[in-house]
Image 1 (tube, rainbow, N blue to C red):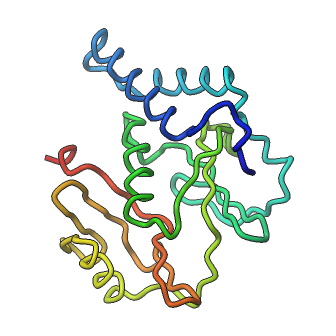
Image 2: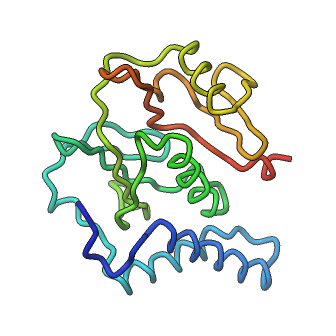
Length: 199
C-alpha cells in the first residue's frame, strides 16, 4: 500500500490544494453554492490524471467496521485502511484536509497517510487513508485523555471537547482513544476544526 513510486510526492497536500483552489473558483462565480460537488469533480480529475485510484480487491485486507464517514479494513499486520466519504467535512472538503493535517500534527504517533481515492460499498467517492494498527490494552479513560490534551496545550470544554487558540478537537471519547500495550495514548478517530470556522 506504499505509494512512494507515485508521481505525486504528497497526495494529501496536493489534494488539499486542489480543494482550496476549487473553492476559491466556485466562490467567485457562485458565492452561495456548496463547494463540495465541484471539489469532488476536481479530485476525481486529479485521481484520473495521476493514476491514484486504489482497488482494494488487490489488497489482502479484512473488513472491520463502518462509522459515520469511514469504512475500516485491517491488513492483518500493521495498518488500518479507511475509506473516508468526506461526510463530516460538510459543504467544503477543505475541512477534511485541515482535520487530517491537524491530526498528524497533534497525534503524530498514529498518523494518517493518504494513498489515493476509491469508492466505498455505497459507491461514494472516498479518500483512502492508512493509519498504523494499534495494539491496545483498552480504551483510554476520560481522565487520561484530559491529562494528555492539557499537556498538548488544550483546554477542556466538555468531557470529549477541547480547544486551543487555533483548533477545536471534539469526539475525543474513550472509544476513539486507545491505551496501547506500550502505555501510550493513541487518538485514532477524533474530529478537528479551525476555531475561526466556528465563530
